[in-house]
Structure formats: C-alpha cells, structure tokens
Image (cartoon, protein in one colour):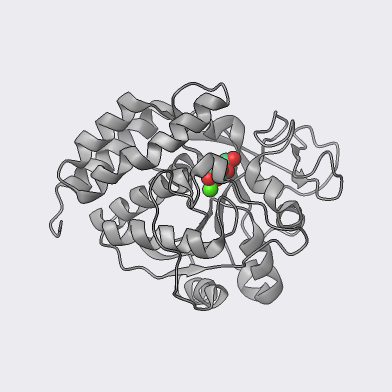
Length: 318
Ligand code: BDR
Ligand code: CA
C-alpha cells in the first residue's frame, strides 16, 4: 500500500481531495499516514479542524495536525471570499484544538516509509520550514507532488500568480531553489483548472456516495464554490485543483509531464508568486521538477465516482 501524507488548507477542493484519499484508504489503495495543514485558504488551526471533520465523517482516524501559523516572511492572507468564512463554504465546523509537532509527524513518516508520498495542496510554508528544521529528512523525500503555480500562464490571484504560490512566495521560491532528492511533480493552474465540477457532476457524486452521511453536506460546501466561480465569470461550477493533484500524485489517472527547471519570484511586489519554467534550457540549471502539462480529465471524473461508490458500499457507515 502506498503511504501518503497530505499537507493541505481545506478549503473546498482540499476537502474533496481528502474525501478521495479517505476512500482510497478504505479500499486499500493507500495508507493515509497523516494530514497536516498550512495557513492559506483559512488559518492552519481552522484548516485542521476542517480536515478532522472530513476524516471523522469518513471514519479515518489518521492524525491531523496544524502546521506553521503563517508564512515566515510575509503576513498571512486568507481567502474567505473563495472558500467561505471558515473554509468549508456554508458549513461551519470548529477549529482544531489538537496540538502536536507536525514536523515530527513528517520526519517519522520519512523514517518509517522510504516511499512516502507527500502531497502539498496549500502554500509551501510547511515544506520550506521542514527543510530548515529537518534537512536530512527533507533531502530524503522522494515523491513530492505540489498543487501550485501558474507556469508561463495567467494567474488566478494576480495577472501572473496562482494563490498557493502567492500566499507564501518565499517558501515556494526556496523549495524550488533547493528541491528534495526526487524532482517535485508540479500540478499547476493551467492543468488543474480544467477539472470542473458543476451541479450535475455534484449530483452524480452524491448518487455514487449513496447512503454515506458525508453526501448530505456536499451541497452546502460546494454551493459556495460555485457562487465564487460564477462571480469570477467562470460559470456556475468549480475548479477542483487539489483533487486532480492527488490523482496525479498517485497515478490513478493518465497524465503527461515534462522534466524542467521551475523558479518562483518572491521579491518583486508586482510579480510576487509568479512561476516560470525554463522549457528551453536557457538557465543551464539542473532540473528540479516534473511539470504536469496535461491530464485525462474524463478519467478523473470516472475515478472520483469509482471511489465514491466504494465508500457507499463500505461497512461502518453511521
Ligand atoms: C489553489 O488555491 C486554493 O484556493 C485551492 O485550494 C487550491 O489549492 C488553487 O489556486
Ligand atoms: Ca488548497
């Protein structure tokens, strides 16, 4: 079984990513060894409360710990207008009261599972902090997949920057300047924004989940995200970046990637969080990433329904 640690900021698309990972955990595809949270869509403690709520609904008892409360070099900005006042759309659950050393959880994961998959679907604050606090463990990370960046592409936060990289540009710049052992698989906006759920797709998902209690909460969570995207001129639907990222990380759908060098701008005000791939080798720097350039979106929709049906049929539903 593939050991997986996810560092996320739920967040509505992070929540669907957790639902998917919980489903895979139950059907035996992965072992979810832990969830840690970054500050981004909401605060790290609220994100941990949200993640705990999702995992409890899904009857997964993996540890959930809040990570660093804010970026090291910039003030924290959260986005209640995108993900709702506390990150779960119109649903409100308590912030986490559990405390614990998230970096120790990562280090234990690396020690116990040399093939640990780390998936980061929030700002890279914790990943950069882990490099400082546990350099040897950081260097041993072999499978890291990140959702972030709008690579050589328009942004969703500024004309050139994507949200996760914009929130903590120094962390993103640092991680790509000093990558761990394995190249980082980067799922950036130009691919992840293609994975869209609309009310019809949501209905399909709810039907696939059948009697599972989590199904009843999805409309109040997703409705907020649909409304946000509509207000942005994207239509009454939602881009589910973080779930697609998990499928790519675990190779449960076909995708295409290319080995390249990524750099992130941290110092300029206008270009904060902008990410660039040196696709033609102008920089003469060693490659630090596998940039995902395409993914089979139809397969992603089928894969989500497959796991939802498996959740519907599993024993232990309250
Ligand atoms: C990313 O930003 C957040 O709003 C989403 O959860 C996703 O991780 C997309 O830019
Ligand atoms: Ca996220």
